[in-house]
Length: 451
Image: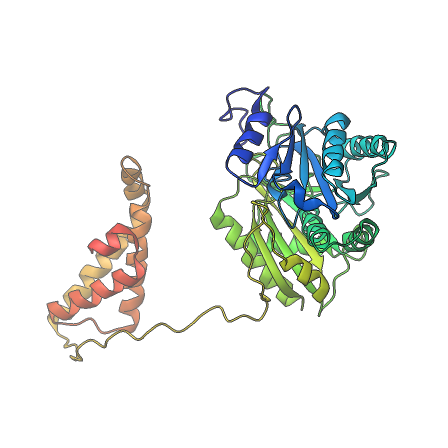
């Protein structure tokens, strides 16, 4: 559940201290004094090239400061948590980038009213001072079948646009050329999120309530209402629902996707999902896209545009061709961009055969009274372990991680299955050797090694 208590020094200074933490741990970044603006430390390399500026409310880290670096953003402007940055700071960033010798400044803005107004106002003020400036709006949300007058919300697809823009700018593409390519690319991106919990702005209570065991489809990254609440379902089912909704032709916000298309997939942690859950969701998304006949060319899985401590995940799909993949694979020094494999994910062989284990001495198990007695003993032991699983877990929780009973159930199930298909050796040495190998392979944990 979301908690208003956070590991901060002060609510008032949390954004400034977070930016200082990001910059102090990355030698390629600097702060613009007097503003919540993160810039590349090598602005001299922008001479003759287009500078790229993005930003928005804080609380979505690593967006957007984590994407500042050669090959991505030139700068990022941060507002207060979930609040658009002021036009004065945006203008200060624009002028700094322009005066570094850039050939123009391109603003990459998520489609939220506050962001559009403040970045737009700063752009107009910059133009009056002779700056060549333009703006691209990213609106990739596929939640609503009939978007409001404000249009679709800007979500994690914005990170894809950062990457494409950064690669183009690094190659020396002119401002109008970058705008044209990005405008086309934004129409090939779709995103949808699902949340298992709310989030809370520092110093405030959660912005909404979600009963335990429920999930909400289509929330915005600030906790704006989604389209549907339902009971929790298995990961495979949730992912199928999300991808089907993103690509639903009856929706005005859908991403057109057909068998044979190639995509880049982003599985984005909204803040509080475990790495274990993220891997399961990633597997489900790749598998279901494969069922749909869609080739997954690249996969990003991690935290790219979060909502503070919200437990949830968003899926972003972008249709791609060879040119888009080339830009996507271009090098960048941005600290939050992952080190991706530049090979297609679809059709890969996931498993290799293990090396053969040295064969045990072939001694035919003998049967007799001892065999029958040991079967009865093993059946009794397994039955007891299965019955007392929770009791053993409770005892373990007092001193450990609470899985003692569950671990022993793995052993009991493995032994029961083995007894159904194998002859129990009448020789004690052979029996103990067989049981040792069985629990060594199937049981796991410290108990598996000890047994």
